[in-house]
Each structure stands twice: as structure tokens, then as C-alpha cells.
Amino acid sequence: AAEAAAAKKAAEEAKAQKAAEAAAAKQAAEEAKAAAAREAAEAKAAEASKLSAQAAEKRKAAEDIVRTAQADAERAVDAANTEAQSQLRVAKTEAARIENEANSKARGIESEASSRVDNAKSQASSAQRVVKGIEGTIATLQAKQEATQKEFDGTFILRFDKRGRLGDEIKALKKEIKAQTKKLEQANKELTKASKFLEKEENYAAKQQAVADKIKAEGAAAGDKVVAAATKKTDSALAEAKKAAAAINKAAEGQAKAVLKEAESLQAKANKLK
Image 1 (cartoon, rainbow, N blue to C red):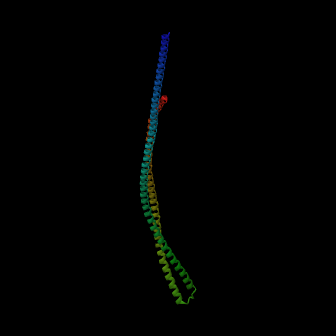
Image 2: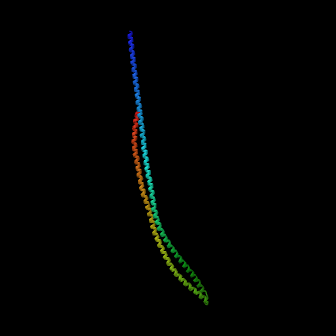
Image 3: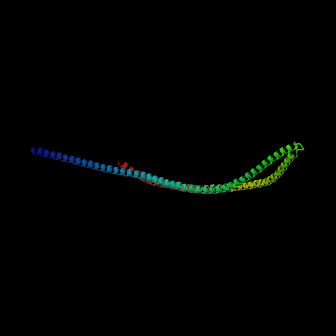
């Protein structure tokens, strides 16, 4: 009976030992599994973090692509605009030179014609003064003749000496009036000649003014043509620069879009690992 009890006890102890070992093995297995799970989770978290960082770098790269392209495009347009303004300044300077040259030539023509008219006017005025002077002299002589004739007519017929003296004076006055009248005729001829010459010079000046006006108009038109050509050229160049800038921005946007797509893909992989 004692041996049976001892055997039973030994069997129970062996069973307990076996159960304890099984429990220990199970616990070890569970701990190993948990450690593996933690290690796997940490690996996944590390990979997710790495992918998220790569996605962030891609997004930043996309922003940099767009920002750099915009800066390059803006610089290109600014450079084109600066060049356009420079060319326009040169064109306007040339236009001003052309107009000034034309105006200077026109002023020379106007000045020459004006000088000729002034000279003709001076001659006509001088001839007019001569006529007026002779007419004044004749009027004075005629008045003196009338007064002397009146005195002669009022002198008693037997006062021979006085009547003789007055008669001589009247004859002399008549002779002088006749001489002045001839001078007046010649002076009037000179005045007519001077007046016709003045009219001729004024007609010449009018024609020359038309020539001068045409030269000034042609100069202004030539200047405008130079500026218009430069404006057309610079507008075209500026439009091309803007077009090229738009193409740069569009290409950059396309590149950035592709990079952002890569970033989204990386972020999606990272999200799946979380």
C-alpha cells in the first residue's frame, strides 16, 4: 500500500511537473510571439515614418519645382520688358532726331521766305514814304501858290513891282509843282513796282510755307513710323516672352503634379502600415 501511494504521488508530481513545463513553454511561446509582434509593429512604424518622410520630401520638391519655374518665368518676362523699354527709348530718341532735323530744315525755309517778305515790305514802305513826302511837298506848294495867287489878284494893277514879284513867284511855284508832280509819277511807279514785288514775295513765302509744312509733316510721320515699328517689335517680343514663361510654368506644374502623385503613393503606403 505504501508503495502504491508513493507511486501515485510520484505520478502526480510528474504530471504537475509536466503541466508546469507546458505552461512555461506556452508562456514563453506567447512572449516570443508578443515580442515578434512588437518587433514587426516597430518595423512597420519605422517603414511608415520613412515613407511619410519621403512623401513630405516629394511634396516639398513639387513646391520647389513650381516656385523655381515661376521665378525663372518672371525673370524672363522682366528681362524682356526691360529690353523692350530700352528699344522704345532708342526709337523715340531717333524719332525726335528725325523730327528735329525736319523742323530745323523747315525753319530755315520759313526764315528765308520771311526775310524776303520783310525786305520787300521795307522797300514798299520806303516807296510809300517817298510818295507821301512828295505829295506833302506838292500840297504845300499848291497852298503857297493859291495864297500867292490870291495876293496877286488882290494887288492893285498899277503896283507893277509887287505884281511882277508875285507873278514871278507864282511861275516858280508852278514850275516846282510840275517838277514835283513828275517826281510823284516816278515815285508812284516805284511804289507800284515795290507793291508787286511784295505781292510776289508773299506768294513765294506762301509756297515755301507749304513746303515747310510738308517737311514737318513728313518728319513727324517718319518719327511716328519708327516708334510704331519699335512698338510692334517689342510688343511681339514681350508676347513671346510671356508665352515662353507660361510654357515654363505649365511644364513645371506637370512635373510637380507627377512628383505629388509619387508623394501621394508613398503616403498611402505609409498609411497602410499604420
